[in-house]
Image (tube, rainbow, N blue to C red):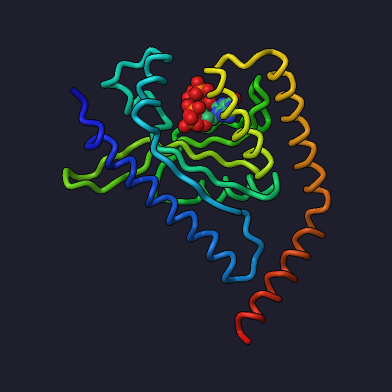
Length: 210
Ligand code: 0O2
């Protein structure tokens, strides 16, 4: 019998550590008054019921989920602009505190559902009382628009237990294209948007000092 609490402890640790490290990057950008490519960071450990359901769906024996299910630990980075995603991927690739074992570009190659996101699978070392354990973590990097779409689509998948009616599915595919258009349009006025954000953050900083 698997003791899920014990098994998932290093996963929780990895998610917490990575959230702190990635939020740290964001803070460093802000302190040096440089535009941050990271808007916000989220993380979660997959609930046991979802691990069991996914293992059943993918025919993964429960005693092999640690090696065969790559997203038990998941961290997500949200960016304002599509171009920021490349910057974040570069930042991640330069790091030496974990290894990248797989890369999936669902932005260049969107999924049939319309899903877009950049996935990196990391092998992250966690220090445990039994020594070092190197666990898999899925890092998803996406824009706010991609995240909006994925969140809505995920709820519909849940509502329809993975069997979204064709009509809704088509609408979702169109919504995914609209979200992508939004990203493209925003990229074109990126300079304008960032100047505005700099003015706002300087005003806030001045207000704090007075
Ligand atoms: P959660 O925690 O509910 O988000 P599969 O899960 O079979 O599609 P695989 O091989 O596990 O695929 O790897 P993939 O597709 O690279 O990454 C899986 C995760 O990416 C999913 O986790 C989602 O978070 C996200 N994802 C992938 N495809 C879609 C999609 O079409 N729509 C949405 N909304 N998200 C997607 P889970 O397992 O769904 O878990």
